[in-house]
Each structure stands twice: as structure tokens, then as C-alpha cells.
Length: 397
Image (tube, rainbow, N blue to C red; front, side, top):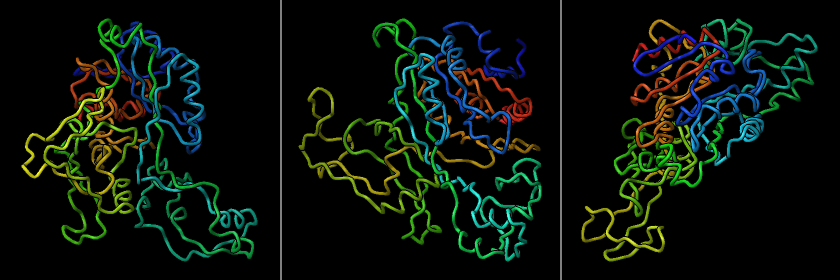
């Protein structure tokens, strides 16, 4: 099979992964990180008509080493089918990560609007959504960025008044909520013997916890509604108190900047407790204790930290410029932030880095993250259009 793109240890194949992945060497992949179709029939696109079934995940299992980890994003309505397919294929489900993102938009039509439409009643235009986040009059020929497919942005952005009494009574009703999080399946190929034996024999075992901790020097930029300085934005230090000097143990909750800001608005400023001089605290390991963390602590004892609750979780900073390569519009509907993908690849990494497989490469976010981390990666994408975008993004790095 001839690669669509191959450079800097990054290889992209264009075609059906059920045909391409079986051509890869058996037991050659260290882990998988992928964003498969959610089966939501998104915008009527053919590629999103169903969740990939067990046959897909069986083929991916064959090329992975024993103990290899798998992370796969899913949709909240169809996540159960994704997990069942992965488990039925022979993978062991280990956890479910939640990626909270504040960028989702409601996609449900107003019941009152549907009633007027069914009755053929003409509604009066009383305003426009243009200027609100996610709405513009730019027609890119696909989604219009307002989750419609009329190719008439002015009509899609129009705010209209109910035309019938029944529509007035049902205005404000809809059949779904705003999407604000995505589940990520964490699964593992069964071990070859013990965890220790698997690590020695195959070079794959578990997650890279220390490289993924919330570090002592890690800060985020988060909205503080009680602060007018710096335009309402403040830097919050997410330093750990107690435990490892490397930072807090990574959680199965991931945030983006929007979700972090919303969480901090709810919690307000929180303070971690001080550790007095000589005080002992369990290190969580076989009854052991430590004292005086961190080493730079003064005679007054260790310091506590303060800030919103988001400082306990990894925050992926999305960059709008990373989505679109120069001179090209990236119209893939579920582009993930590169910071998020880099974090997940780090969490999945082996002591030598490891070979990454993304069998649903989309517009190439996993490949870009691997390239920025200096990791070898193989991607497979069915759509040539998406492959063109992925290659353009890779070349722009």
C-alpha cells in the first residue's frame, strides 16, 4: 500500500482502515489514539452513519502489542455502542475519560419553529444571530458553522417570531441539551502474563503517569468574574500540596479553557491547606509518610495553593490558528485541540516513546501532535478531502 504522505516518521494512508490496517505488521503498534465516527448521522454525512463495530477493533487489536492502550473519543448518545464494540473485539475496558469543552452549540430545533414550518406559516424576522459565537454569513458549502445545511446563512441566522398560537405556546422547547463533554474510552489489549513481564517482554505497560502530572509550575489563564484586573483574566498556579514533587496524579477529567472558566466561576477561589513543620502526611504507598514537601519549604511549613477547581485537572488550550492550514478551510466537524492530543499521547507513551496508530485520522490532529512530540505515527483516513487538509496542516508545522 502506497502512503498518501510519509515524512518525519509520520505516515498517512488514504483508504478504508479495514483494508489498510491488516497490511501493517502484527504486534507492531504500541498504542492507539483516535477519534472515530460517533454514529450521530452528523449533517447527513455518510461517514457518520454508524459507530465502528467489533470488526474494526479486532483488526486494530491484531497489530497492537500485548498491553497496548487504546483511547477513542465518542458521542454521549452512542458511547455505549462504541464501548461494547471495543470490548467485544477483545479489548479490556479500563476507564472512561471525560473531556469537558465549553465550545459546543445546541443543535436541536425549537418546537415552535417546527410547528410553524409544518403548518406552512410564515414567520416575521425580528433579528439575527450574526455576531454571536459560531454564527456568520460565510457559506463554506458544508456546515455554515451554524449546524445547518441549507446553504442560506442569512436564513439560518435569522431570529423569527412565532406565527401561530400553537407555536407561541411551544416556543422554547427542544429535544436535546447543549453538548458540553465527550467521553473517551480507555481500553487495553490483554497482557502477556504479569504487568512486569509485559513491560520487559514488549516494552508496553500502563500509562505514563509522571510525565502527565499537573506540574508545580503549571499555570492556566482562566476567567475570574470577581477580578477586573487584566481584563478579568488571571493566572492561576496549580501547584500541588503533598504527594509527588512531579505534581498531581492525572485524573480522568479533562477540561478546555471554556470549561475551566465555567468551573472556576462555580467554585470560586479555593485554598489548599498548609502543612506545618514536622507534620507527617501519608504518601499513599504502603503506609509510608513524607514531611516537608516541597524541598524549598520554609520553616513555616509547606505552602498551600489557591484558585479555582480547574487547577486540579489538565486544561487543553485550543488554538484557532492550528485548525486551518494556510489557504485552506478545515471543515472537519470534530477537530480536537493539539494541546489535548499531545497530552493524551504523552499519557499513553512508553519509555521509548512508542509507535502511535490513528485508524480514523480525520484532519490529522493526532498526526500533528505526534510530529510536535517527535513520535512516529501511522494514520489512516477514508476521506481524500480530509487527507488533503491533514497533509497541509502537517506541512505547515
